Length: 466
Image (cartoon, rainbow, N blue to C red; front, side, top):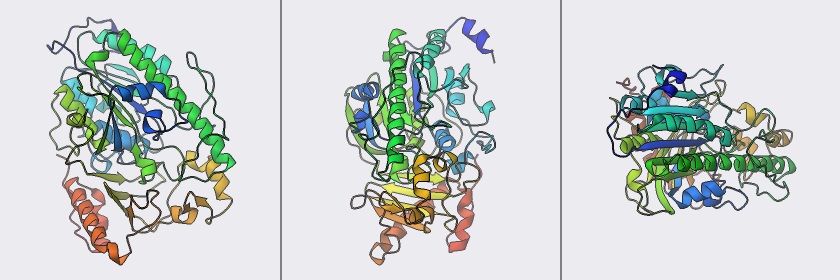
């Protein structure tokens, strides 16, 4: 493979004879919940994301499959659940989790189809050898999206008439070692938020520590939005805006307890905006239940690139673009093993339009804390109060010590605090959802099926990934 310097200086002869390149710009926020104007947040200042939604399709029921950075991104890039791909937890040392050698991630499939492939900012999926990038700025600081877009312009221009895939990993609004890295960045306008005026999510306590951190979070979200605007402007300036499928997502929910690393909606229900250049309808809100396992099939559909030899877990959402409703999109599945390597807490689950079922496979363990959440002012303000303190309507005790099964009626209980799993009147529903999860686990080759022996269920193990 050519070095970046060699490639950038090479003639940009098209590898695929197409009258119009079918480019892909994939924008990934880090720890962003539904905190944009387009998703109804009146405090967030996100004009560029709101404009992107106005020109595209905003999915109102989009879900990551696991609320953890590397695992969630691996699902986006492989179309496989983490228990299938092997990216069980975080990729960076000392956690060192990595996809299985036989996995072929999206950039490799697109590269084989003649696409130029580039990455800037956060990738956070291993192994590196699985990604044949033509242009690699994965070490770039993802806090300044304006500077990132200026660099990415080089890649877009060098690709010439060849189709390209550009993977953009913003770092905002992830926590920094201190706060949210809010400071002055070249080309970026700062906007501070008043802690007394920011809304507090219903799953968090309303206290001074939470308000202070939420105000910092909103500033980071505003910085992220400017980066999105810079990338859109870059495409327009390069004449590529109407040749490019733009997809914006977040990897999981906000970096606060009761959200990140959980399977509750606060951690898994996320923004997904798709701007299709040829869509007949714009500014559409789709209520289809879609999963981030659907993203790789979507990009393969758009590019017409050949998929891997093994089956993928998702399906293309391109037929949903521009349509407010769709039939046959009524459930999504969840799978979580680790965040940090010390945070072992395997969970499986399903969400339908009305209900959510979660199976805590190691329910005897206390629910573990990510370092950034443990060290946050939010958690420290609660920890000193003991297990009787409340995270919204859930006690800290219930947050830390979970039953084997959880079942929630999301219409009657959107905060997911009244567990119905042990109630006789919900036994049939619980058993039906448990069976659907078990069948899905067998179909997706879940190695944790061995734990079913302890509950008397079918212990059949998974077949290897072909």
